[in-house]
Length: 199
Image (cartoon, rainbow, N blue to C red; front, side, top):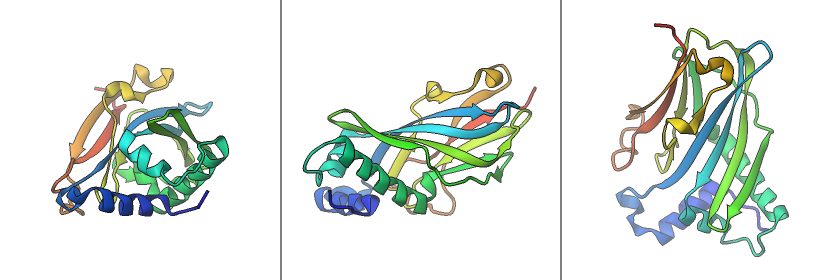
């Protein structure tokens, strides 16, 4: 399979196939997140699944002559190389302070149906963090505002049993003040706020 910069080629394809791009065309990714704790009950990483919309899946597969496990693996490798340069469209914060992460090595790309790609990945933290008594935030944003990454509802965020009685999940939206023009025609950035502060 011809190796390409997946997200660059995706934007080029959108530009050629969707003339409304200049008027605010966006592609959508449905996200689920699951927090994972270490043996001491500290947050060690976030496991995510990204489901790409059918029309985007079609564009991303159009250069694949044969859909096979080998070709899907190569596509997944290309996607992750691109996403690493883009910060994986995700930032994690505890009480407003960004958390350091390490490189993602645990990932997979699947095609559960012929119409929807599914990218799975685990975001490992550089060091485990105790979020009890604190607010943990998942900030999902494509820097240029073209990709819209959303958790569909509260059920899209899974807490470990140890946090279920101590933390509350909220979905909020913000307009990125550093990139307001890019979001003028699109959806605001979504924040997943996991509030583990006790009342």
